[in-house]
Amino acid sequence: MLFHSSIRKELARSFGATLIVLATVVMTMTLIRTLGQASRGSFNPSDVMLVMGYTVLAYMPTILTMSLFISIIATLSRMYSDSEMVIWFTSGRGLSALLGPLFRFAWPVLLVVMALALLVLPWSNQKIETMKEQYEKRGDIERIQPGQFQESATGNRVFFVEKDATGKQSGSNVFIATTESDKETITSARSGRIQTVDQGRFLMLSNGQRLESVVGKSELKISEFEEYGIKVGVDMPGATDDVAVNTRPTLALLKNLTLPNLAELSWRIGLILAAINFVIIGVAVSSVNPRVGRSANLVFSLFAFVLYYNLLTLGQSWIASGKFSFGGFLLGLHGSTLVLGTLWLAKGHNNWDWRTLVDLRASLFRRAAT
Image (tube, rainbow, N blue to C red; front, side, top):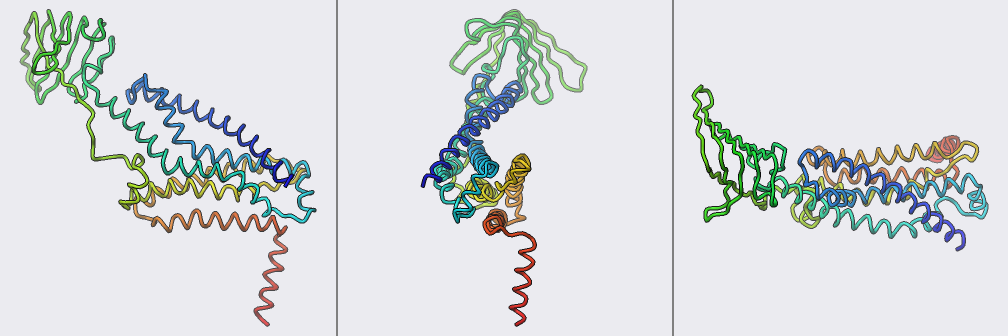
């Protein structure tokens, strides 16, 4: 049908433009936040772009859903303001007849949202956690940055090297502060180099001094040396049993239906159900008076979108704490939203108002009385 094809073409243009704008905004905000985390030592600065890419990929289900929702409202509101919907209504078709072409346009987007929510979302979260864990567990030598105080992986040693050469294999003006049980040690040297022997890697210091003290005592032991070796261990990343729930594959969550796993499943499945509901809600709320304008509808739609996703997040914490059951929350939030959206759509389709509803209720009471 020509009318259906024109709607889908306009939806495609609006959806593409909205997606580009939203993706650009999210990428910019994510880049700023990732740079801040890298400056605090959460990520390797060289991995900023990778972390940003994985983070944006995790946000894509929400971005796609919001782009689809805005494109539907913008397209249908424009048709109302240009009186194209008047032609549609006078031809004997109502609002519910728009669901067909809208879902024919939206089903590829809904499939992508499903794939992202169930498959890509845990994978991207796992990649981010892996890079973060690798950077946090890097060895002491890898942590050294010239001109900066750096803490060791175990937290009991602080390094400082004024400058280095030959790829961090040697440096000058080395300072090391170590705390072990009740003993504190401060070692300084003019130079140092990395040397590998049979027992492991050693930091060989030259021409320096060593100060030892016991916590709570005033005694201080000072010694000078021409060469002194300190073993520096390398903390290799290892597998941990405590895996973040948002990094677990969907099949793993289904095999072990604990409260945290059910909470994560409610979020992933909720992303899919919310995308479907927003197609119906978009048709219902797009009705606009040409004399009033479209700004009120857009503001209300954005408020509804934010409220819906906040309830998704809140419900995830409720399920994890055991306040709500998994099925009860899905039925309560998404089922009630579907019913309200359908009733709102039926109101616009049948042109109901409050007088019509009062008359309908009165007629039902009269029939029941007779």
